[in-house]
Amino acid sequence: MPTLILVRHGRSTANTSGVLAGRTPGVSLDERGAAQAAALPGRLSALTFAAAVSSPLQRCRETLQPLLDARPGLALHTEDRISECDYGTWSGRKLAELSDEPLMKVVQQHPSAAAFPGGESMRAMQARAVEAVRDWNARIEEDHGEDAAYVMCSHGDIIKALVADALGMHLDLFQRIQADPCSVTAIRYTRLRPFLLRLGDTGDFASLAPREQAIGADAAGDTGTDAAVGGGAGAP
Image 1: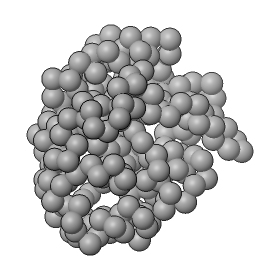
Image 2: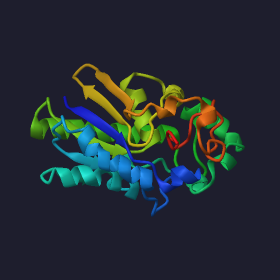
Image 3: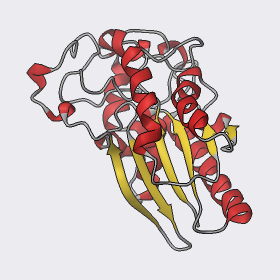
């Protein structure tokens, strides 16, 4: 079965302002996010892709555009099932403000029971994303063979949920996974099990620096112990 190259979108204007964007329209890449996207073709130059698949949201399409420009024959497909989690009334709110919501403790410690007011549950989010990947695996294999690879650009919580599924982890453990902006995660699927080949690879070790060096961590609702809902802004 195919190899899936998962790319989280580059850093967005919502990431740098500490806002949980969700599906809010018009959220674009910031200057650093655009630079991350521009570097993507070089980072992935050794790979041949049968297709490119994107969340319908602007920040994902902008992230893949330099790769598409570098490979004129690469077809782009939009997949609604890998769109960002529907955070409902949490969308557009500051992460620092949301950290005081009682639901946040459930999101962090028991996400399989978390459902966002006016939105969807994290369980439903994972189910639709996993179904989308299984469908694309079958489609790519049928059209291009079992050794094919394809690239998919999505969002932090979606990628973490897909990794948890590939590792056979319960969704309640997925907050232990990190996916920084424009990070690359690779999963090779086989008939019997998936293999996680890369996880959150950015080639940049700045995010591993001591937390006191991070810029704007508190504004983004980063306590240093909780996972960043939506994925976070990555290294400063």
